[in-house]
Length: 160
Image (cartoon, rainbow, N blue to C red; front, side, top):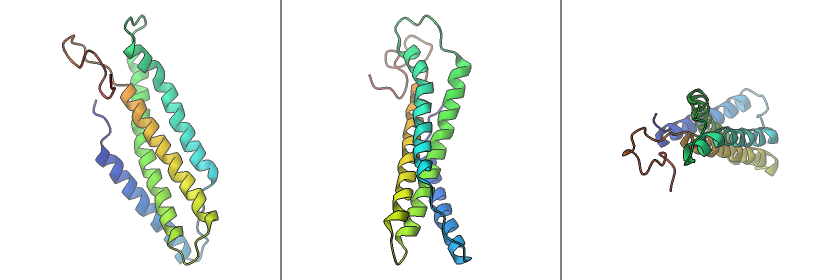
């Protein structure tokens, strides 16, 4: 398994930013009001990031335990790592959308804090989701099976 690359996250953020800004611009250009992201959007994204960490914690404790009685369930670990990878990409894209919305509102002739604060909350929540998903992805990395492989059986992405 390869970890989610930084270029993938960057591309997701750029595409999300362009779509967020262009969507707001198209709404305003067609005579409709611009959309404000609700404050609960950022809170919900941050909560999903925390849930991903909670799902990955049992795998981390089993992998790092010296005397692992129950083996790591590979199906559970696979599900969590796939959810974490999806969360990382979604978090980067949604932080881009929030950034695009923030840039749109900041570029208006009159800048109101009532428009920028929800966009910043959305960006922070999406970044928390992305970072939580990346940490969960690293926690779900299993050590190699060979005794001579890996840095003393420490999973990739973990610092000893």
